[in-house]
Image (tube, rainbow, N blue to C red; front, side, top):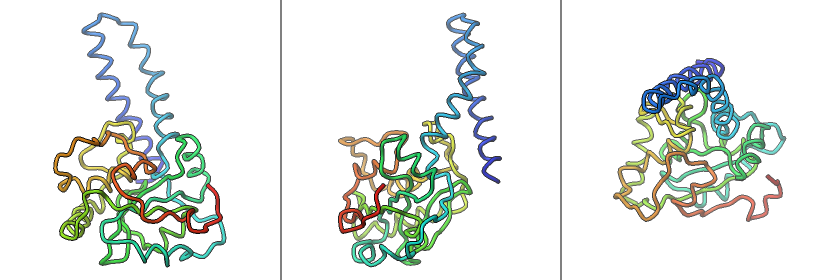
Length: 233
């Protein structure tokens, strides 16, 4: 489905959810005036969600002239199966998202070492991308090793991510209304590791996770800006 169609579908679903919630409040509180809030709140919620979190929903098109494999050498020295590859895109939407969320990153994916590709979720849904192409659309890169990773479960996490290929993008998930059959970028990469989390509650995972916060559940082993990458975010 085209991006405009997905946004429209997201808007319709949001209207339905908000309509149900406001209807319930009218029954309990008897405040019929609240009905007037719906036409106002739905577009505001939609615009806020799209403005603050659409970074990984936008398909990034490279706009600078740097070689596609600029960071591949250092990345390949540390990356392993199931690692998270977190980037800041080079396009204007990515820069806007980074500024609005006060985060230096706009997108994330999970690495499939067997295919030397990443599994990512963008507006068209969950799909494979060559690692070189994915790195090539970034102005900054993190490689993050999830805290739950072991030599025994790394490939299992990737296999779980593979089962999500072809699934749609979760626009509602961006505001905490997750759809069980859809995934936005960080939702996808965290879900791959969910069976191996062991129910740890010392650092609970929120309903909405921005790419720049993934280091709270992992260890950053590579940051392109710390080894002489002069491009600034």
